[in-house]
Length: 525
Image (cartoon, rainbow, N blue to C red; front, side, top):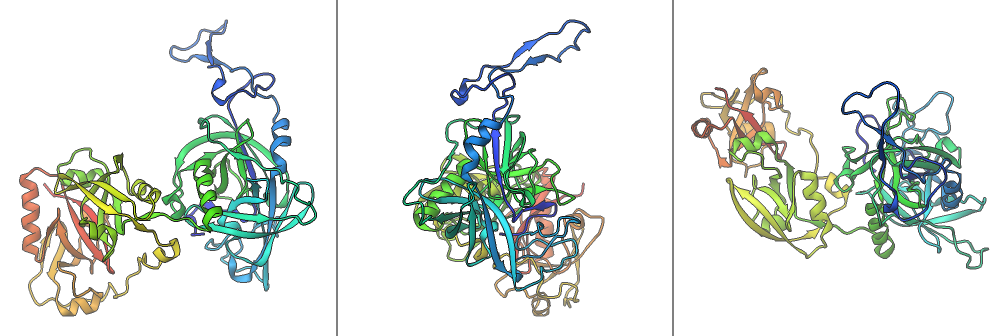
């Protein structure tokens, strides 16, 4: 799995989670999910209450203990032991807990040291989703497993070999299959995904798992928030549930349940400055996990739609530059040559506001909505081009794997951005930048493609908006507010046109090391 951003630890030792509805009282009522009575406002005698600060009576019917739930669901939770090659993962050492501190591939330990030895052992959790032995876990738990290197330990003590049915880096999920030759067809205990009522923030969460190798550990907490973004490739397809039930390395890959024994999420990561739980954990929602598992079981992989466009969020500053007010969406920075978007007529700097009638407010939302479609589906994109609305129909393609996409996502500078260019004409100033024409010397120095047309940024004032936005020497400016520019004079003309329209900023299309991006810059008064 792709490395999590700083502060996120994805345990290769995993467990299960149980989310329970926020009902407080005596006993446990196991009726329909929507049957809980609403909390009643009550007043207490004695000191007067502050205005606007009502107290709520706890709703009846909730369990005083989670023991019954634990007994109901824990047999379906398993420990997954994985043997992998030594280079599969660096080690993060936690004093006093050596041996239970494996971090998945891509993570860096405090000392950055690779785990020694020819083989590496790690553990994770999973859970049965069918009586015939299909299991769900995290991809990062099993991604580096050797052939025949996955063992599953059941609550009753059985140890079985598991095979990988399919893995999906996009959601960090995997499906395994086990068979017990001695069971003579006996069913495995399994649990179902929640598909009736979405738990609310504040509802109970119980986790059951294998933290630091301590199997069968139960903890409790609440759902803290929805729609969390971990900032890695999995967040392209997952809005994570945040929970405060203590989970650690050892809980990844295990389930989270509601009080009816239904899976509401798959525990995947924690945020921690210490390496242990600080009450901020993240789980993949059940609907994503169920849909992914079905595809993996049926075809061994997940197939997603794809339009072949490099996109980025359309910010308020970008909208102001085009006089579009509070319009939200995703702006196209570049197109894959010959890809579905280019064939369908999409252009750089088009702003996509909806897909098949579904409103788009960010680049991530666009990626998810496109990915939901099947290859060959026709996608109707609502687009703003130069501020004017239009509809573009694109035939969806097949999304490449995350690994294939990452090969084309290199931010490195390959031309030596600090090497001096040698323009043959006088330099010009605009928007806090020094601009010069692109000559052959500049193309060699900064590895600028011969097909790229624009002006070269030869310097940036540190205290300018351009400097604060990260523009630098060697960047190529190709357009201003959608208008192509090939000289500093054209840049200045485009800025003046924006001023006359009383726009507070302009959108620049910048190419750095072959990668385009849209950067809004404030116009000096």
